[in-house]
Length: 282
Ligand code: UDP
Image (cartoon, rainbow, N blue to C red):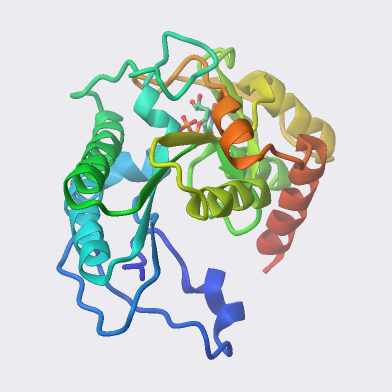
């Protein structure tokens, strides 16, 4: 189910002939009615790129609040297990590093990023309330920066932005001085972690991400080395409230799920570049 506000049918076209697959175009902020049985609900709906949630602040707040409420209501009605896609953004601009799940975060509620951070914090709160009050089997994954094929070329996030700019021979736009850090997880590792969490009996939030951390300037240089003809780095203003550091502590995922990422950055980024290279050719 998707309202395709930021999603694309191209990403699921390879399932179109699969009789076990059904797509429903619907906005989860409106009441969801479904006749069949449901075992699992994976609630991933939300703009997730800072560009998108700055453009769509009210939709972002509504999908995290009303959308999560509707999806939990459906889980309750169907006796389904419910998994919430939360985010490292619940930690805001973190004052402890790396981030552990018991850190409560440092979020500006009224800043431009607050629409996403607070929506996801509310989503976590209502998920725990449904678990405690109605006994729903719920899980919460806190997803850190993830990359891989099927991201949108113009989604604004740093991986498609730098790869797209480099392939087009344009300058690489590093925001601020590029000393801010991120830790990038390849998509197949993320999916493995989420699947293990869905099958577990863990109701507390679990960080899923790759602890290998780098500065954004370092990331820009890696992309320039990998893509011949890439332009040089230009600096643009740092967005408001842009977190200065981010790295997951994955101790909980390791001990409770037996999970850790296995795809090295060097491999994942090559796969991602070939995907975008094909996209740029069509
Ligand atoms: N960033 C950048 N240039 C871009 C896009 C992003 O320097 O063209 C920086 C951004 O300021 C942030 C980091 O890259 O520090 C990661 O940004 P992204 O939008 O991918 O997601 P975030 O981790 O901030 O949620």
